[in-house]
Image 1 (cartoon, rainbow over the protein chains, first blue to last red):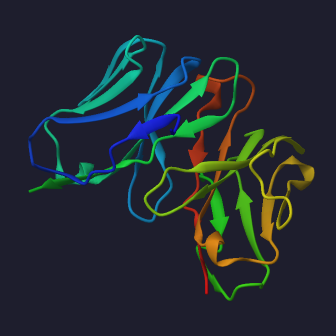
Image 2 (image 1 turned 90 degrees about the vertical axis):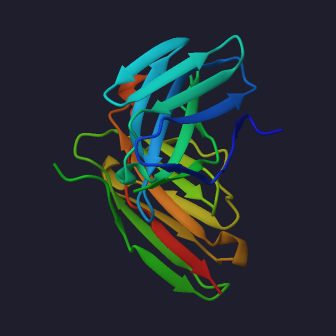
Length: 111
Length: 117
């Protein structure tokens, strides 16, 4: 079993929809949770970063962490065609430096 | 500010040939990472440097892979000899360094797409 599980999709939604992306994990030592966006033939770029449980909002993006369920989510409101990309969840454990990535979910937002 | 620079962007070689990738991190970033990303997968860490020191190379296949970071700035990753299974995107990332969390925010380069025939 992988430490981080993420549905690869693809997920296709119409423009303006609310998108929900999710990851589950097995290592209870994970404390830092991140979402990266990766456009085709580009490197990942950090979108959201959260520490431990809770919510964090940045513009149209909201990240949620539920440590009791070992479940993290990224919500995108008013999705745009420019949001079409692969979204990778990532985690780091306490005191560690090694980032574990999910496999990524491919998102397509149709105009 | 320039981001992480990698070259070449694409490389096609025949199996058993050597290949090298180069990375120039963001100025002032002490930590440098090399990742391998297979198709449809997330990046997997190969090696992490703190300045000139390789502090985590546990996932680096040392029989054929080598890396160096002379003077704590640029880095090269080499494969010799390459195998068919090495086809992937090789990503370099850098961060300010220190502790996990905010200060470990990684900035990725565009990657080198390697195809081994």
